[in-house]
Image (cartoon, rainbow, N blue to C red; front, top):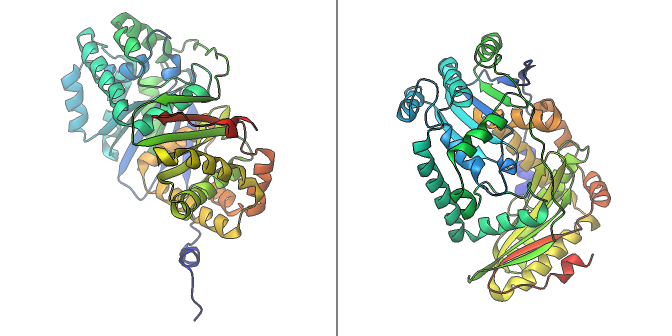
Length: 433
């Protein structure tokens, strides 16, 4: 019997999975879109509200407002005060969270399918009838300030915040944590004004996944949200393009290194090839950055790359953390690996990428919360929901040739480099393309 490499074993054991999907959608007259997927194999349900109220909409002198507002709207709504609202969700067994991104705020909850009607009613109160109590503002702002101050203990997260400031123009470069001055300037009047402008049905996406019955769900959402009046949404005014490099001084034993370059947006025909390229760089311990920089050179413990999208653009972001005396060599090697990617890709690398992407796709099908995120994301970026078979077919279609063709059309260049540590590095090798 011929011997098989570990990759061959994985590849031969990986079966094509046929999934029967039942996806529904409806956009109400006020602009709210409901997207739902029935999952017969579960008894739970997850709901996800994607609200166009991210930190990019923060007033310039009150950065951090969106994050505080996402906390404040859950502190009492409808006929329930803050404690009663928390108990109501607990009594329904709702696992819930709120988060803020650049363009959206997200409210998420998961519970047993039979509790969906009551859960939706509570979220209707949170979104439409929050108390926004003035007496709670100080506590919400204090928690946000602690989160901001925690960046000092997380150099990897802090350098990523700084990278955004040099990757995107304002206000797309805003961070949800805000600034000390911005948090201290918050008032209850500014919170309520921002809520009135941004928390509305126009552009809101509600995604639901689990053991649902579509007619009943559509009726329930209509009862709770269809009469919510829409208003014009404020437009973002983008600032000038930022400078491409920066160094943040901080006395550390390791230098934090980030490198970013432009890629295609999610809706681009090259999207899957772009994801394939990123996963050649960073898709496990067999990926290039791990192998070439950590394993062969021993330059750093942590290294990787990821794809970061905004609606009309995408970026590839690479990160490494290296001992200070090896930081310059690490940066140079990182840039070298990015630049040489279009020179050639092996079939075995593509095989590994396919397995990794398919595994992630199948695991997504196992989780109602992951499905709600995928439904909302697809609708926002594409205006439709991709089927499992469509995605699987696109992954199967990846080849060394298709990824290289993408890289020739969109080569790694126009690098942005931000470092954090005791000594600035020589970045001329990045900017002199």
